[in-house]
Amino acid sequence: MKTNSLNHRSSHFAALALAGVAFFSFTASKAQAAEVSFSGTTYTQDFQSVTASNLAPATISNTTMYEVSGRTNGGSVTGWYVYHQASGTPRWGCTDGGSATGSFFGMFDSAATPGRALGSQGSSSIVGFFGVVLKNTSGSTINSVNISYDAVINRNPSTTANSYPVSYRVSSTGVVTSSSTADGTMNDSAGTWTSSADLSFTTPSSGTGAPGTQAAITPLFRIGGAAKTTTLSGLNWGSNQYLYIRWKETDESGSDATAGVDNFSISLANSPTITGAATAPVKRQPQ
Image 1 (cartoon, rainbow, N blue to C red):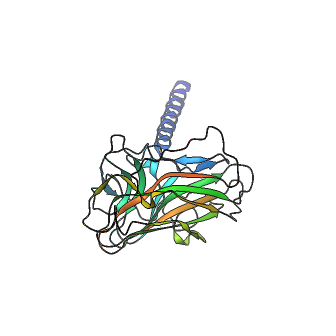
Image 2: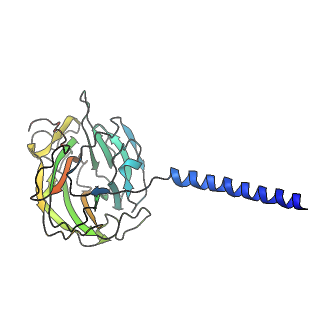
Image 3: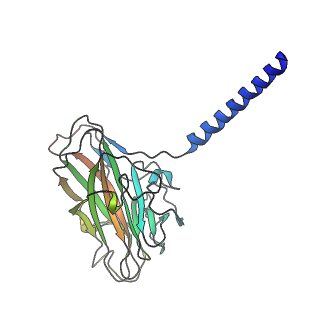
């Protein structure tokens, strides 16, 4: 009897061990949401880890925060998300400007060393957002930050210049990875958003990127010929709180552009330059 009991217990423990290994393997393989840790040191993102290879847009779920690094060809772009709020079919893909399918995109060009960016193309009355979530790990309240980025385009619209308005908010809630329209997402209903006219952009109305016969644009064209810059003030961004910054994609008349963000930078306002901080080179056509 003791032998049988011992064998039974051994088998039971072995089964538990196998179940534990299986559970660990399952949880370890799941993509974990992250945010950019902002300690006060300048943070930059040039999206150069995005794979410069066309990827047909594939459907993703509504009202879900998808981290770019967790998407196919999304590289190591952690803390950046795409979120579909309403209407149309949300998708993720990568394009050199040749795709005419509405989607969030890892953008690139056909230069010898491809430029890369994060953006979108609207279609079918889509309302969506792409952007970044940063966590204040400085240990202090941050009231103002400097923001800089390049607005870029690699496919022009057919009839109407497209607008990409920017808004932001501070929250105590980190990213919610399940389907949600509440705090922890980029949804309009997540809380009170503050608009930034200085950071918003519109695709060109003339010249490169202007409405007309659609075609891929290479290399990525920097809209306006200079970076978009501003200082966000009065943030009251407490320690361990989150700053959400989002660009809005809405379907506009005609076939839309593919445009987005490159060479993003955030730093403390009125702070000295930090020696050795990475600065992404501007890899764009002249205006």
